[in-house]
Image (cartoon, rainbow, N blue to C red; front, side, top):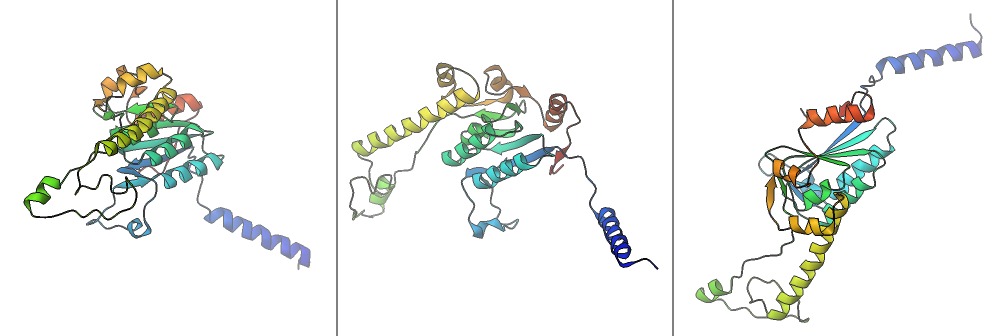
Amino acid sequence: MPNKPTAILLTLICLATLLWFFHEPNTGCNVAYLKLHGDVVTYIPVTDSTTTSSNPVDETASEDITKQIRDANRDSHIKAIVLEIDSPGGSPVGGEEMELALKRSQKSTVALIRSQGDSAAYEVATGANVIFASAESEVGDIGITQSYIDNTKKDNQDGLTFHQLSIGKYKDMLDPDKPLTPAEKDLIMSQLQVGYDRFVEMVADGRHMSTTTALKLADGSEVIGQTALAEGLIDKIGNVDDVRDYLTQKLKTPAVICSIDQ
């Protein structure tokens, strides 16, 4: 009969063996695959986090993507990060937060634009080391807008009167039921210009091009992937398989992608 220390040791060995046996095997995953789909937002309200097929929320929060990028950087098994993008854009703040998270990543980063990578979503892509895009994708849309519908003529026809009860010269600015004053328009355009200049600077920096070149491309238009390649907005035409091949060569080991729904 074994003595007490020996019995304890045998018990520990048995427990370790059981843990090893039931532990999920290492899949060899070394590439984190993240997704930016739908509108770019800074956060998603708790009430929208559980959606149904009849009321889906087609948006991605920058706070979620930036956390995923941080987690991937802390994981020693992860050697690269791929961000799949299929988005028309959205919040400039959300776009900048994700763009900077990619730019500051300690791991190799790839942006993969599928059908759409426009406006704030394209800004995000410029934070990656390399941008892939489908040949038929929509890319770019570098510009700023705050357009809205003026309802004043319709209100007059319907017999509606707008009563302005506010303190602050610009408090009711962009209210669709009042005309936009020249002073309000000047203020809005000056603010939009600041945002536009910032956007152009970030594109120029991320794409390693001059501000002059970036300005020529920043006309608010969308271009297809093949044209985007010729203009320097992306680096390569391809899909997820091409990204995997690229990373396999770069990492000098087979790229095994995690969390890809395919």
